[in-house]
Length: 355
Image (cartoon, rainbow, N blue to C red; front, side, top):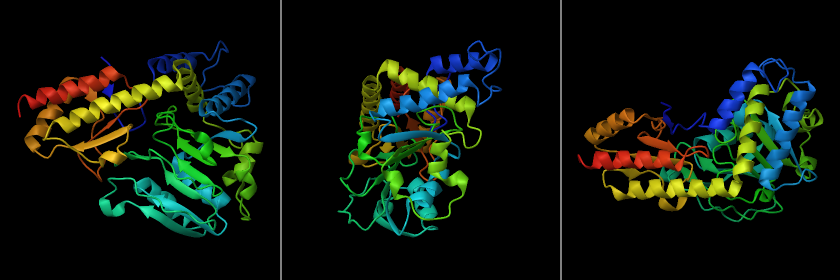
């Protein structure tokens, strides 16, 4: 029996993606070769990566005349460095909403001046901070749209034009209705809602590329070089990109609107259940609650032990919270079914009969 996977990442993917990927490992589209051994320079793979890049833009509602999509290495962590390495000329603004934004701030500070425009550190990162008006002195504003560790999420974004807006969307991309045209650069590690671990998507507004700084850049860290090479400046993550393409096709066929609506339903059901019982304490403030990563604690150790036993009994997997918060974290990525969330809620109810 397949476990119900609430893990924070690498994430659950649709069953069809697992099945098609497994077939391709044995024989990729009748080529007589595995997807694991096929040349990244082959016509067959060029078709894969071209389609994947176009689908990314299509799902975001962006035109390839205004934006360019890349598949790169290094996860969001490398983008923490690449963004300032390419675009930070004198001063950038960052919003601090937790560990991942702190890591991005730390990398940018090695290039030039960084001003932390807003932070929720004093509240223990339980909320998204209010962002004050931003002046034109900044090269860009960077924020992290969703925080997997704390379970907080931006539900609206500041109007900062003409200041470029840069976002790490690793854990909530394609999960909630969003106007992607507000952003000048978007990056995301694939392993949350795009595909397997290993590849990273970057979407850049072409006009923003004109604002690159004057650093004598290492070629491998230069967005312009990756664009010129069509994401093949070095050997791309062939299998991860192929599986990501399958997932993007699944998103398109199921429609992004329907997937986002299902995510909203899952989150609503689970938050209502968490708020129902006084022995469960949601971590994030109500106004900042994430629909992707739902964090909570059970303070009574006996209740927690009983809950753990029921989760094990019903093959509910991946609920352990991050060490910085403790407790539990239920990640409701796109491929997780509403039925899986209902099974988790039933577990709460069974525990409650013994409380």
